Length: 109
Image 1 (tube, one colour):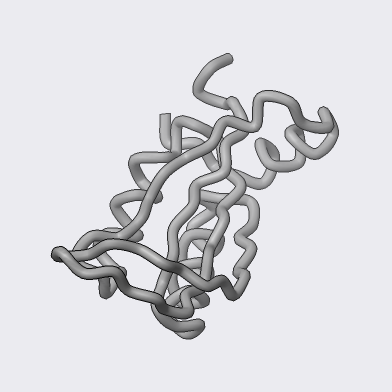
Image 2: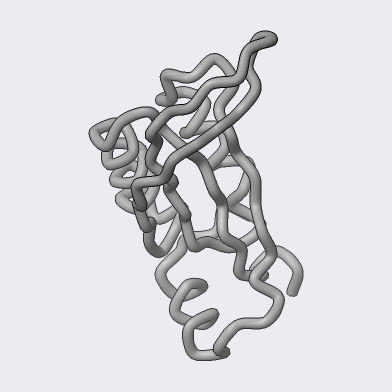
């Protein structure tokens, strides 16, 4: 069933508190089974200049049908003008882990 395919939704934030706040809301709402927050270093082009900044990557484990709802929460709570939001299909994953994701995520469909 395509709607229940396991995916990872990724975003980045400029500070840990924002990452934790967004992650907590999405997991509390059961849009994702879990969220992982990792400090990273980003080098990127923005408005004609190259920037170098510390950031926090947030990876949500969820099912594909919930992508739009997660995107909506991130956009509503994010401080960036253009937040990074994308999903990666977990096409090859340990079956019991994929089942755990599905069991701990309420689908919106």
